[in-house]
Image (tube, rainbow, N blue to C red; front, side):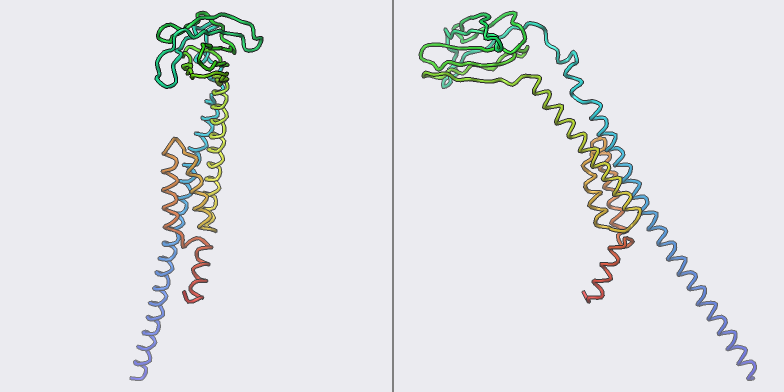
Length: 268
């Protein structure tokens, strides 16, 4: 009887130990599966951020390759050697045309007189076959302030000459088309460089996501990479998806775990 009891207790003890061992094995497998899933999610987030950043790089390089400086010398912006210069002289208060305004064209560089005309009853004037270069146009009429306008003619016509009652001279400077396009070149280049830089920030964010060291810094970097605007909105969508996945695995980042344990130790 005693031997039977001892044998049963021995078998029960062995069964319990094996049962506990199996439970530990099952728990370990669950932990491994959980962490492998988290690691896969974090890796997927990194891939999405990389993809969005690469689209941003492509967008930036396309902006550089399609620089407006190429358009300045293209036929689209070439003008003929001569154009007609026309416009209106208008009274500043009523907006009505001012008749009899004497208009004279000069070469702005040499100040050589080129041609002259006067406005009709509607205040309209026209110069034909004018060379495309910097010109000085003067508008004079008794009782009105004289206008001296420096400009480069184009096919689009001229802004109205606004005549003010009084005496004296108003000097006007019209910006050249070339300088406007040069400004567009500068802006486009800056946008392209900014796009490329923020895309590289996104690649670094993906590297940080893969390491799993600092959660907040990774999210901040990924947020900056949204400005890379890969293919307008496809890149930002991919990066946003990656940021959402990172938020799901934030407990796998070292700094998040450290901060959480510190808070728990402080009793908060």
